[in-house]
Image (cartoon, rainbow, N blue to C red; front, side, top):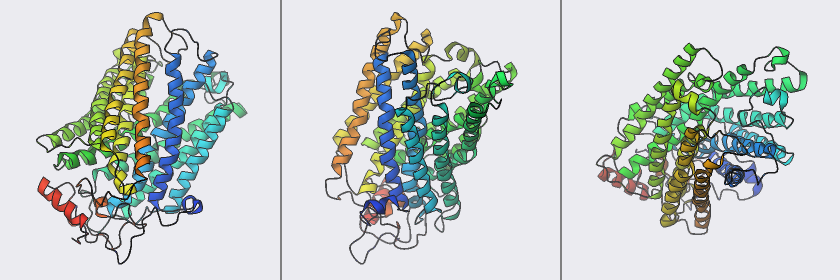
Length: 553
């Protein structure tokens, strides 16, 4: 993509990292790039907490008898806190809050998001919600599972359910504000000439994600508010003793939480749609189909929540309808996978670290997607419901898919964010370890679940031990692969700013700025002069040379 103005300077450039170096300048910043960095640091912190709980769970499950946690209640608290932290404080905000915040204005030629102060407020709400979650952990945690199912959460649990619900409630407003900001920015701040079918696919996916955040998150918010009202004031909404219906909570929760799956995975699609064309040196195959499939996924996401209630006693006709709709979600998802594959066909592929992470995403997402079709079938879902088959399916999509894409995006745009390059050898090794470790961890759980091992159990039958030990061994490899990027990326900050504007030879508008970018991204107003992704390998090299020499198009 060419633009009318790049980054020419009359004097030494002042990038967003050096434009104010005090703690106050960071905590009061309205620069979308700095807010993205603040999110990255805080999200990494919560990821480490959630991963620690996951490690404790896997250590407990190495033996059939409970011998690490003092009681089943302590085990329940551990897996609940793992789920709450990982989903609401890592997976949901990870790519939108970090990469979306940093890149969306750059990609559409804007100087910032539409509401910079609201953007900063969203980070503070995230931190407040996270602090509330940490307080709940320090006070003994919550044991209901991350779904907060009633009547356990409203009737039987004696732990800090309302406090955990409040933490999720506050974090939900952070998500809503981020989505609102992205929607308004995409509609009103695109550079002249950037029509809807010229915006990058990353922006299309962020737009679809934002729709779900704005429309779906309030449903979760009101659900946890009703749980709080029932706990404090005895309002009979979900408690059957008071005339309530516990299944109503499941409908409300999954009406948000199934679209939330796409809040987590659609941003992964966004990253892969940018990385695959760059490292294949080919234009994206079927740009319009890939773009509109993101919107289709967002729409279908609101229509399939009932497949989580196949065994709840809902009507068999409702179950059949939700099953058919769940199969239909596979269509736009498959469009993306087939088009990425077609993009790589006969391409000049480079297997740098970002590409390896994105290839891992495709493989793991396909495995999770195929098993998703299995559990969308009524007969199979009845057999594997509430077993480790569901645990494995969920993690293949969320952890294997989303985390792989997140790390691929961090590696891809790290030179743009920091102006520095990292060790390609260690990055490739980390990507391989992640892929191997993940499959070693979660593929055995498919087998465990199909054989009948239920999830969330403190103890299990001895014949399941071998597969559980294999899963724990894989988790060790996965942990090494996850920690490695934190080491070599931080070490890269000690080196000189040697990345250059466009180290990958990419064509996106964000690569036409300095690395790291200036505070307001572009020195001159930006005018888009060509469609995205329409380059041959030779044209990509010319784009790279233009950016290197700051040539005005």
